[in-house]
Length: 119
Image (cartoon, rainbow, N blue to C red; front, side):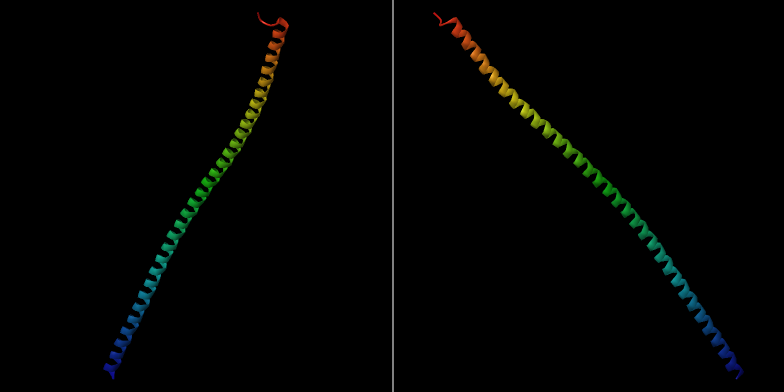
């Protein structure tokens, strides 16, 4: 019986130590996995932040391009107005030149009539 009790005590102690070692190993493994997950989440969050910053940067560039495009469109509209005005002015000038040409011809015809036929 004594030997049996001693053997039971040794076996019980061994089992207890084995269970404690397994618990500690489980806890250590669990802690290690949690630490890895935290690091992974931190890296993912940092990547997402960089992506968001890049996206904001691209959105700003697109907005600037849009604003520049609108400014160029407005500029082109003003140039088109100016060209239209120049065209209108040119047409008016051509009309006046035609009238002046007719007046000059008429003037010379009147002078020719006054001076009479050439000999």
